[in-house]
Length: 245
Image (tube, rainbow, N blue to C red; front, side, top):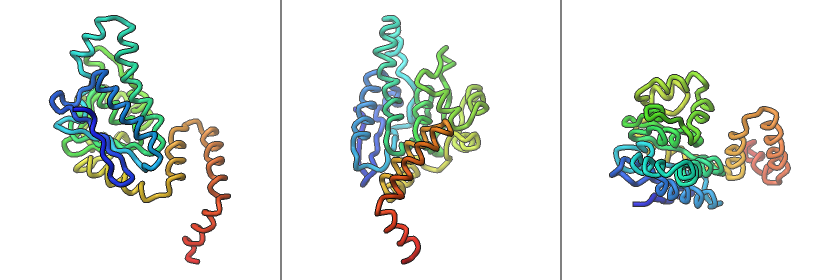
């Protein structure tokens, strides 16, 4: 089955749906996920995206038999067939104009761990856990996992995750990587629905500002957004409502 996409009002849920392989992804599956993300990104009506999965695993990583087969074809196959699609998924996540929330109910290993941590927020349910996974196969997180971990939890979280076999929700929350909960999909959809009640333009602005990590660039971008919001006649109307007039 391909990636499943459904609307919940102004929220789009994208669901990995390869339970027979524990949602392990090869280049074909990666392309389907990338295209689903790009379609959601292009929809100006949405307020948030939730990335979830069917089955017992969120994503067990890359589809190793397929990856081994392609890798045997040489460096060009690795660069274009495998990582052209795999990194394309994460570029689509980076370009998402609204918050993207991942819901980890089940294992998220290797590529799946990177996918779980790449968005705006991550929920890990009672059945969920993450693991770095790559190094056990003699590889590195070439889809950006090192960056995602450091961005959230810093250097110590990176090295803690590297030595851990399995990190549950409470531990991941303690490291600053995720939010522990009972059911990740329900919690992610609840957060997304709350975002859908906010004014869309400031929500999109905040989504973009969250990606600007250099302090001065952040201030410049924030000021540009704020000038536009403050000089919009709608601001005066909303301010009066807040003041009770």
